[in-house]
Image (cartoon, rainbow, N blue to C red):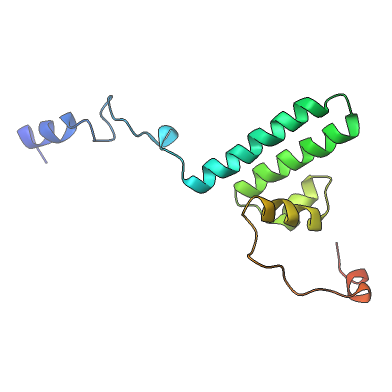
Length: 119
């Protein structure tokens, strides 16, 4: 593309390289699911502010917020459990509550099978 056609193309404010382009990747409007997840993060932040007096609750809420952030980014609960001081079961509950987990949980494991799981 050359000449006036190229100038007209670049002068279009919807072209990504135009300085007045309204939708840069950082400014793209979030999806409804993302809005809900970030609302959940804000709720956790508020609860954390209220729980700062109680150290154990603050540590747990911080771990939940970090875990939720990693789950939002697409990390698997088992991988998040390696970094956060929460069990995989607790992370699955957090993910399900935030709408990230499966619609229904997997098969139930008996006590003996649970003891043999490598964690």
